Image (cartoon, rainbow, N blue to C red):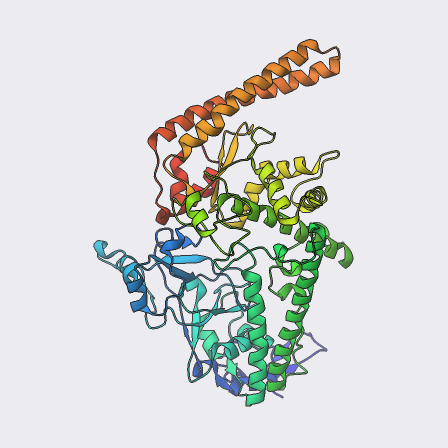
Length: 601
């Protein structure tokens, strides 16, 4: 054996022949590996079966890229097959792989690229200045099925299937099968421990370069072994696709899995049933991934060098809390049981937050409990458009897509009342209070802090008023689709407006239907408080009423200022161009919107 380690001197001291490095492509300084591992590089390189390509550089992502939910659904072509097909479609936006977070097998389908007329604008970007700035279009490979990965990792590699219809970025470099190899078999190898360890030898940095991927040693299998690998990989891919599409950030989202439950009319039971399914799916994925690893380890004869085990936090299903969440340092000293309990609390809380988000989507007409998938997702669509697609809805969307978020009951159609109506429609009247209690209890597990003596409806109202938009901003990566119009810090008036149903008359309607009536209601409420203070015989009660009046007067002043600004912008009849994206359009309304700086910059 050429590798020597002198344990009497230093356990990290190695003697390695210079010739040993040459056995590994590129001769990296993999001094720690033994001769048996070096032997695997005598297998055929992956480049014999797989062509890798560095992705595109647009030279201006703000101009050419969008998150898929920002633009009109009708302007996106999700299933393009070739360049000619893209031109004939007349569509502007096409799916774009851009790397993304650590996730294996399937997912990270977030971005679009402007490829109108075969990328005419992007391919000529900079031409007027005398130099084309964008490059690496990979015209022979765009729209083909393949495999993609993020170019920067945290030490664990994650390869994903890339369906037909995508272009790809430098941050999401990709590869394509050749010589009758299919992408399923190749993906099974790339997500194995063998590939991860080999990549670490070839390039022990956080970058995963196309050159190193091409040098990986790929084994030959008999037909039975190959069929077994492919069968397992297909099951894993399908489960990861189902998981990805179970959340509204997927363009193939249909409806919440929580609504699929056949448990009955109790929401707590529906969640318990769903959580059991998620646990079983996660454990099955862990088993299949470990079997995949074992087959490759056996093929290379490395049973004494590597183990097939895959920790739970590397099973990249969103429904798996061990992968989804990272507990803070305060949990370092906690027991495993305590950490698991905290993960369960976060998962339950987030799942019920997602239910509220879906309910808001149904209020806006984006979704329907009577029909799967997106309903209204193109600019200026109306309630009439919705009714043409869903003729007899059990839960009717808001007529103007303006949904108030108020800390008190000022409007009969505010978000809190409509969430209650949504829960009643789905799970019935008999267990309504019990279901509202479960939602409130779940929100207080992680999303908001519990308050003693607060009713469940008030708890839901507080979540909607104080936390929902923060969650929405995080979910939609600071490119929200429900925009929060806010009078200011005192929250005298706030409402959500659905981006895709905004019209030039939305602000005027907001003012006449909500802001002006609220001004009158606050005035009447103030008169009642004044009368109560005058008749009060308790010093404590008088003090409380004076404090409430002071707060009310401040809210009235805030609302009056907001109304003046709202009238100014309503008179302008502002138009939006969804192709410009949220960042540009959000900045057209001055300070009427919340979190302008976070979105616009």
